[in-house]
Image (tube, rainbow, N blue to C red; front, side, top):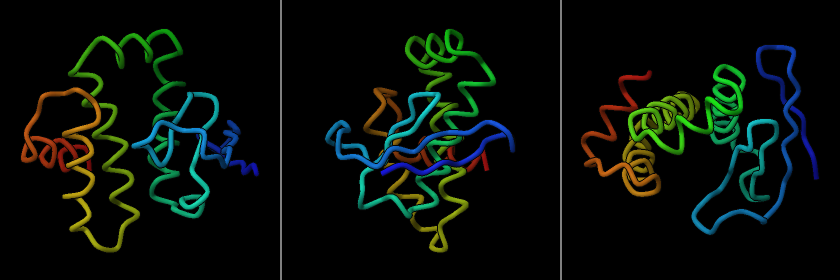
Length: 125
C-alpha cells in the first residue's frame, strides 16, 4: 500500500506501508520516501516524525544530512529531537514524552540520559 504526503507544500513524499523495517522501528525515513509498519499507518505523529526527517534531508542535502547524521552525535541528537518534538505535538497525552525520550535515549547511540533526552525534545518544541 502507498500513501502520499507533501512537505513544504510542494514536494511529494511516498509513504510505503510495509513490515520490511528494522525490528525496533515503527517507521523509517529514507529522505525521498518513508516506510511505515501497517499497524502505524494512521499514526499521524509518527508520520510527521518521519516527514520531519524528509524536510531535514531536503534542507541539508543528501550528502550533508547523511554525513551529519552518521558522524555527529550532536547533529543526530538535533535531528531526532526535532522529529520527536513534532511527533509529541500530535499526541493528546503529553506524558508520551517519556516513551519518546526512552527511544531517543536508547536507539541512536547518543550516550545521553533519560533527562537529557526529555530536555532535548522539549527544547525543540
